[in-house]
Length: 307
Image 1 (cartoon, one colour):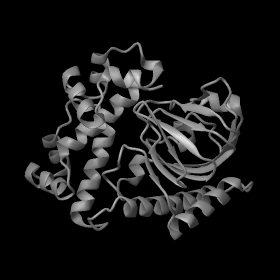
Image 2: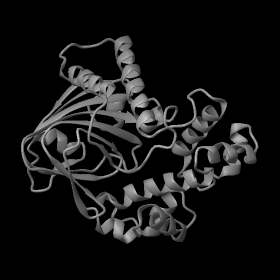
Image 3: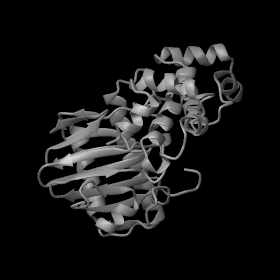
Image 4: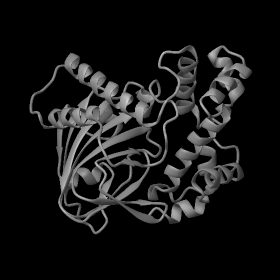
């Protein structure tokens, strides 16, 4: 987290309990599409993790993160209400009780009735030891497992409590939520390599490097192998065993940052070339190819499809 708390990195007040009304939410990057949010949120920060309780009436709102490409993952338990989310220009409806989504990407959600959900917002980097190959797509699940029901109840109780917690207790809750989320994602994504294996540990370290340095155009598989103290061939074999490649993960992470920037109206004054450079791509051509391969959309289409 580079010394910043979860609350601070999200642009929130740096205290353990924060209640947000409409004006407060607007300052964190959330806005009502019709001018009215019709929602309120309660946030608790536990170390690097935010637990958020949100509710409201039928409304449509859009979230534009404080920082483009913010590497966090939202685990969302929908407790009331049917919703629809905008994905590549199309509205997708769902009644699923569980949604997993990258919270660093702009998103737009529509509710037609009263709604309520509880969220665990976890830094992507904290989850890499559990599931290094985190998906960049919204995933919705129709049923909750028994451990997921227990996690939902724990999160709801955590965010509703008025009790202040000590730094030590905050760290304990942080670890508990991380373990629950990590285990859930590991099971949902079918992670094959056992946690703690030498190959998994190496891959985890390199994925953390990719996540933190992908915007550096000088980062490549050979440099990552040198920094990890292994041969390039060995590192490539480790990633191949997991069904991916070092170069592919670098490219995917850069594409994620580029997509986030292109879909944020605050950066409309940046040219395609500038976005490519700041995302770590060597040229706008390489960025365009990556975005079309991964998202099936060009840079211009990504900007046009954000609404």
